[in-house]
Amino acid sequence: MDEVRMWAAAVCLTVLAAALLRMVCPEGNFSRLMRVILGAFVLCALIQPVSALAGADWGKVDSEPVMAQAESYAQQAQERSEEIMGSSLESLIRTELARAEIPVEKISVLVDTGEDESIRIKQIQICLSRKEDIERARALLEESLELETEVYAGEE
Image (tube, rainbow, N blue to C red; front, side):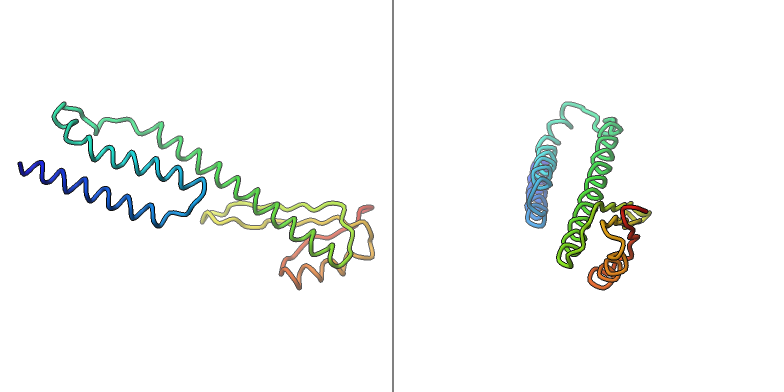
């Protein structure tokens, strides 16, 4: 009877922990994944006594494929974050230059992930239509966005 009481307490604590984690998780695509993970966690807590009776050895479960999949998802998320940051920055630069009536031919933003997993701006190149706007564009971006940029005209 003591085992049943311990199992019930473990299930209650598991459900409580899952509920708390659901409350602090952000909404969106990640929320759906978190619900699946928490559901599996609660399900494992419920099944644990049955597996002990059946003699299942969960310690020998191969977690290698799961970890490889998780690392793949993390890499894809990091790459997508870099893309979003680059395109957002490009859009912001384009907007600032349009306000100053500086025509732009091309904007190239290169971002990279550092060793500490933070996304860093490696390089910003801006190709302008007119040579006479180069210094004004560089000064505008350094002043308004605090960004150092490489600005050149189309014929260079």
